[in-house]
Each structure stands twice: as C-alpha cells, then as structure tokens.
Length: 397
Image 1 (cartoon, rainbow, N blue to C red):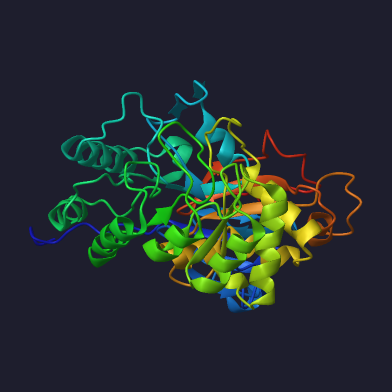
Image 2: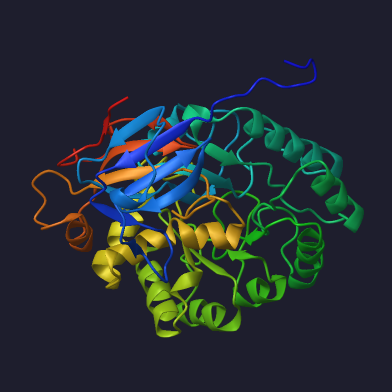
C-alpha cells in the first residue's frame, strides 16, 4: 500500500425493519408509506418498503416489531447551565430524564439560571461562548444540546454579534430577560444577530424571573425575532387579543410551551389553524423553571394539543420535530434522506383505550417510548418515565 494512502474504514450501517408506522415529521406529509430505513454513519440513506431497500452489510439491526418510528423530539425552549445539572431546581440528570421522554435535541433560550450570570457585555459574551463550546463537546446521555444563547443587554454593538458568530454562537437568548425591553433596541440587535446567522427568540407575556418584565405584542412584533417564545406565556400569558395580534401580525415561529398557560396554548393553536399556519407551531417546555423539570413535557404537549385542540396526532408530532427543525435551521427532526438519524420508537401505552398509537394520543394518553436513537446509535431502551409501551423494538445485532 502506498504510504500516502489512508486505510479504508467500513461505514457504520444501521438497518431498521418491521416499522409499523413511519411518522416523517413533515407537516405536509406526516405519514410515510415505508417500513424499512437504512442509515450510514449517522445519516439516513434510504427509506422504503423492505423489498426496495438495500439492507446488506448492516453492522447493527433493529427490529421495530411493528411499533411507530418518529423523528427524535426537539425541545425548542430549555435553560441549561452546566452538563446535566440545573441550579434552578438543584437537580442532576434532568437531560437524561428528558431523553426517556423521547427528546433527542434541546435548544437553549439562554443560560439565564447560571449563578452570578454576568450582565456586562464582555461577561455575557464569554459565558455564551463557554456554553456553546461546553455543550458542543459534551452531550449529556447523547442528547444534542444547542447552547450558548446570549441575552442581549444595552450597549451592545454590531461588532459584538459578529464576534459571537465568529466564535460559533448561533443562537440569541430570550429578548426581554436582560436589560433590553424596548422595541427599537430589540429590533436593531435582532437584525444584527440575523445578519450573522444567529437564530433568535423573545420572551412573551408577563415576567418569569427577577429581571425579566412584561413583553407585549407591540414589542414582539417590532423586535421580529425568528421565534415568538412561549406565545402562551411563561407562565403568564398575554390577553387573547394580543396573542391573535401576534399570530396575524408576523410570520415567525409560534412557540407553545409546557410551562405556560394551557388555555392560551389552545387559543394560539386554534388561531394558527384558522390562518392555515400550523407549519409555524413549535413546542418547548421552558424548563428547568419554577415549575420544575418535565421529562415528558413535549409528549404531554403533543397529546394535549391533539386531544383538546382537535389536531391529528401525526400533525401534532410535527410541531415537535419537522416544524422546529425548519424554523431553527436544524438537520434533524425529519425522517428524510440525508438527515441525521435521530429517532424515537413509540407505541400506545399498555391498556390505553386507544385502538392505535395515534388514536391513543388523540384521546389524550401519553405514548410509551420503546427506544431512542441519536446519529444512528441506540441511546436508551424502554423508557423509565413514560407508561410502558405495548410493544418495543429489539436490537438484533
């Protein structure tokens, strides 16, 4: 062998077969006619019926045993601090618990619970870069935590956003949790963030922590962030008239969270549906928070919005997968060729009144999680947190 030739490396090939229901995450086509998937080196290579998919050379094989396969769930609104510990509730292992709720990706809305969080510009930039670096290098239980989301403060200039972006920061924390609470300043800084490729969100509703404040529809619309954070309040919601004003006045993402006003969540969902804009609806937990950590928060939102919001279960699942991926510029959240192989296996809970997984969700029951996969690697088996699934997948090799 010539000295300059690199040794060949066989690809890691995962084949998943006997899928009973394939949920794509795409709100325009939520169910796929397929029962087999081929993954190579953590990315989806082929999707189809068993007879049409090359299953040769598999280094790993999962028999789904007729269970449903969906994209790994995405929590669009979390507040991480350090690894798998949160000082907000002094709790260890909260991210691992969320993995057992089917969540494979989390997006930081700001590391605001960091003890002694710096408010000066040098400090907040340093903290954001540190968080981005830390979670890029360490995935708690394999979960992808997209962190490093600075909360803007008065006095920041365009050069600060350029510096953050150059350092790898891609997010902006909740506008309104820092000193910037007026529309014109927020609009200017959000535009700078967007110019340098940073995805942004804004606090919506009444104050949630000391230092935050009321952010009403006028500021939300003027700031024009990529995502309207917790449109149903976190926890205190705006009046219905202002929620409707936001839904009708912008075309950005409409985030509904677990730690918010449930009636307002249903109102926002109905408004989006009336407008034909369900593709804008995304889900988060807004945790850790005063309400604690909700390992099943995303599943609970899916079931609630389906059961009480009259949305088909397969569409509600898209709120926590493909919709979020599109609005957050992620390569996961969809079961499609070329996307990251992040999955959750689901089945109806044992003894649910539902006749199928989707029917059980539409009745308001939580599904059982049988397994999670991230980048083509199994990260957890039968969930310790969900009701037990009727059937679970099995690793054959």
